[in-house]
Length: 127
Length: 138
Image (cartoon, rainbow over all chains, first blue to last red; front, side, top):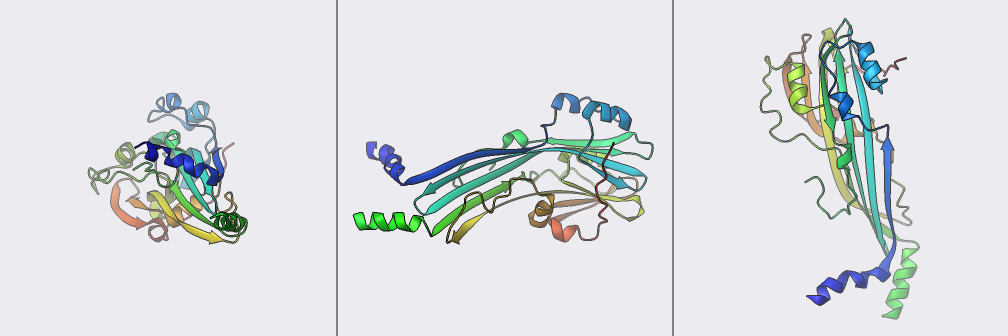
């Protein structure tokens, strides 16, 4: 039992390096603002609430706007000649669909960016 | 014993292996599409159940398609010299997401009523849709 617990310590001299990094794209979506969205809001009201979108897709006379934020966490460990590397990217997304009068007709949000994890490849993650 | 250690240390400077796992987003739960009914469910209903899609595409006749995808892969990479920062793109790439993801494409008619749901590789399911370049908003 005691030997098993100490086994990882025996590997320490073989560890050549490790890394933990985090990359983000855009600001996290503010849930408090997202819940204020309501059908029939005008596009200018949405702009005032959320700011400018990252992408606008023209859908005939209608349009869709995308807001997003990505959060990537990377973990690496080098043991002599082998490196284990795990990259986990999660995202906040919000799509708004406007009708031909620039009124909000439908919207959907997914807020998962904060669930990104630092983990090694053999550790279950998001299972 | 000592010669083996020297050999291992020498090898570490030239030949390396990398085991990499990449997780990009989370797939929809398997039962998420159970309550969607083609011909009845509208876009708002679908978004309420599934959340925000990864992609929105225009189709002919004012119809639209939306897509959900995610992927994870892992594997070994051998090389003469491995830089742990190489091969890992720090920025999120929607093109890669579309190319590598399995997921769902939902087709909506011009009234934004659900027409059909398809499952598979997004790159195979999305070939027919118009790609309008993103437009900035002032």
